[in-house]
Image (cartoon, rainbow, N blue to C red):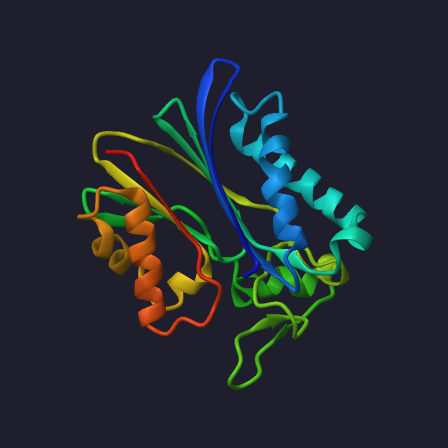
Length: 235
């Protein structure tokens, strides 16, 4: 198991925050563990988080990746995807991600994907412009330089010249139509559509029970990847 989760609640500068994240590590767990312990701290240190939210989060992701690369001797050559969500004062939701862990929002029973799946084929031009390539071997998924199945990740020092760690950031308002959010690693999304995931747990009011239901369903569909899931209910 190379996945690490965060579910935390804090009060910072008169703001009530809910902090949620999934970090799906590869080639070891040390980078994912480092992210679990440091990424939100770096985000919350950004003085303009409240006014320039997107810029602040992108800066914090960049700083954290630089710290990981500087500690390659301790953390190893592996890496990690990330999907983070910050709920501010129960009404503003900020989601950021690198890689293929995903955030999905349910509004009035309809699934809306908040994150972006950073697949090598989608970013082939950017990867090639940095001198890398995307392999397309029959029977395998596309990979950056024939190795990594995501186009953006933390760590992966040997691939970093061809690999981005810049997140996509989405800001949404939580209103009376917003029911719940799912954060999950790709082990769920490889065997379930966003709408299937939403419909399978919409009737479950307990968030922990709902998350377990999604994991059990993914296992029953023979998902072979790491499977981690957080469900956050808004009403």
